[in-house]
Length: 44
Image: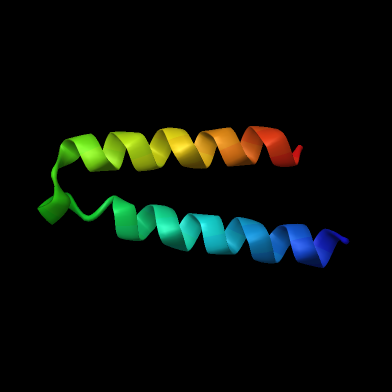
């Protein structure tokens, strides 16, 4: 179970870093960061 959660967190982190690409603008980074926080808080 811990491995599944770890893999899921790594996936979310990689998606967040894609969304954090500043060529898409700061607003996209903000939304991506908030989405990641939401998922992390629900995984605990």
